[in-house]
Amino acid sequence: MNVLLIGSGGREHALAWKIAQSSLLDELYVSPGNPGMQRHGRRVELDLGDQRALRTFLLEKRIRIVVVGPEGPLVDGLHDRIADDPQLAGKVTVIGPRRQGAQLEGSKEFAKEFMFRHNIPTAAFRAFTKDQLKEAVDHVGRMAPPFVIKADGLAGGKGVVITSDRKEAAAVLKDMLSAGRFGEAGERVVIEQFLEGIEVSAFLITDGESFKMLPAAKDYKRIGEGDTGPNTGGMGAISPVPFADKDFMQKVHDRVAAPTIRGLREEGIPYQGFLFMGLMNVGGEPYVIEYNVRLGDPETEAILPRLRSDLLDLFEGIATGTLSERHVDVDDRTAATVVLASEGYPEKVRKGLPIAGADMVSEAYVFHAGTTMKGDELITDGGRVMVLTAFGKDLEQAMANVYRSVPLVAFDGKYFRRDIGRDLVRAPQKA
Ligand code: AMP
Ligand code: GLY
Image 1 (cartoon, rainbow, N blue to C red):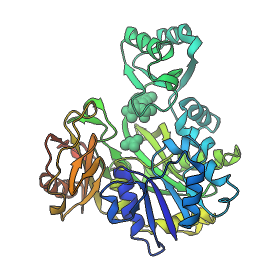
Image 2 (tube, rainbow, N blue to C red):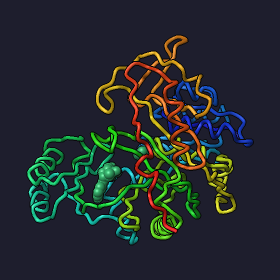
Image 3 (tube, helix red, strand yellow):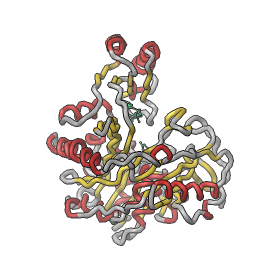
Image 4 (cartoon, protein in one colour):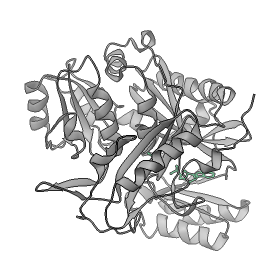
């Protein structure tokens, strides 16, 4: 079958690499892709907003499956535009939900209300609109700190402020609700109870009827070692996660994943593709911090190497509503993933710097994120530049293996965290 993959980051490179291994694949196209993905598929430049051009491409290339890496096109209704196009209907399966299902990520308030309707554990919350600034500030006045304030819409991972300072909380609310910080995304805010615990990213794949859990991962979100400094898209990941043991993952399955898929079905919200459950482990109990309607980045670079099953076989299960008959087979080894970022990330970075040595890496997978070509030269083109993943029989080995490859890749201002996985090396494992 022919496949079109949308996106250009490390997550999409890992998806392209995995899809290219499938015996079911004829042609893979990636749009816009990156130089690393070129090895696995043909790069094309599609304007997703141009329905005619998109339709023509899908028909001419006989695309069966469209895999959407990032959330943006899903929240914007790309799935609906493909599925509802009379010439495409029934011919093309989109891996990723329709606009309605994408609201699980696109609106925090929608997600929170959904969780409450279906008894899915999550922090208590209240939502406020633009004309309720006073109520929102009064609410914070009555709450115990710390305060968790979130812009309702998509804000590129930057729409969350956690503070114990009431004055700062009031200023943030004012900023979001009346001063237009985060634009439309911040015209509604959600104020949540603070959850104390350790985070873990859990994933499933679903055809809307049944679902399969995928390996879980831990993401290292802060820029600085020891989890300090500003939040980023993610600086590294490990999978599996020692504290997300069998017992915990069973709770995730029973209390979060199953009621979510059942809830979507009961509400008549079609959903197919991946679901990312951002969880807090609070004393061994999973609470949902957020849903994402896509895979995580860099979690994908850690979990896809561990997936032994053919990804296109799972996608075919979605296309035909037979996911329940497919198998998810996972490698027991540990994967450790380290992001090589540009100096200055997550703020302003310099681009266009030559990258050397990526070809020298032989003991780790190399996934491109922010790279581009200038003539024959590979250069940096973003905050997160490259992502390396290595296996080990345990976490310590995986870390040692990936960190041996990190020095081989060189560019000016290369920055990476040296402590990915370190907090969990001797984490006690429940029997
Ligand atoms: P979100 O964009 O909702 O994932 O939030 C960004 C980050 O803020 C999360 O990854 C958590 O580290 C933190 N966070 C969000 N909600 C809460 C909460 N209710 N309690 C504690 N930390 C939270
Ligand atoms: N690494 C977190 C995310 O993809 O949202």
